[in-house]
Image 1 (cartoon, rainbow, N blue to C red):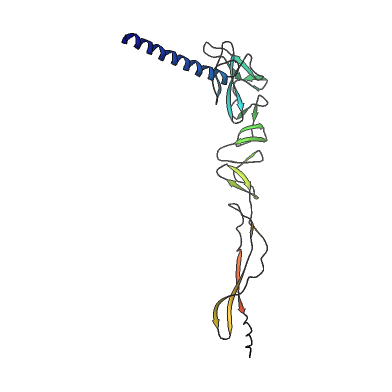
Image 2 (image 1 turned 30 degrees about the vertical axis):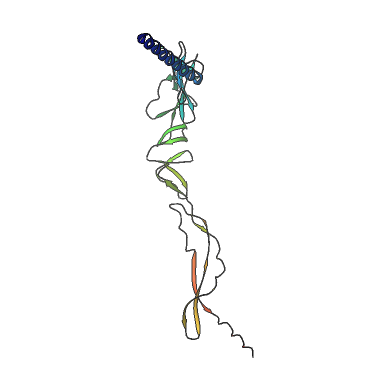
Length: 229
């Protein structure tokens, strides 16, 4: 009796595990695009169904896998026993090449090998750079060793950003005369005025001038009130 009960419990455990695996598999399949054999929500297709080509597509700054029946323009299909992929090629001197020679950049838009300007690692055209060498600053699609006069370097982004100088508003009216010390018949005091910073300077911009100042003043005596008789 005990043995039969144990067998029944094991059977229920296997049945539950099978249902969980089925649910997990169906959940993954719902996330997959058509043609995917396996996939993830983050990376798209990880493998393809038979006879389909695996291709990486740009999704913003990331790449996502897709499975296609034929490769897109600028790519050709390469089949192998394990995985069939779409391989890109680039035009160079009238021929299609898998990669570009040294000094030239594979242009993903024009599908050709492009000669970039000095210091540029990736460009759309010769004078339109999109990524500079690590030690150069990027500005207006060009690479600079130092930033032009009206710009300053941002060492974190490696870009030339506009140089901002401090800007202040006008002075307020002089404040009340506040007593500081007393000498003879006069009471010496001090009055102050301020001005606001309208624009803070950048790292290399002109610093702000002083925004408050004080000057000496004389506190006038109050007239004595007459006593009533």
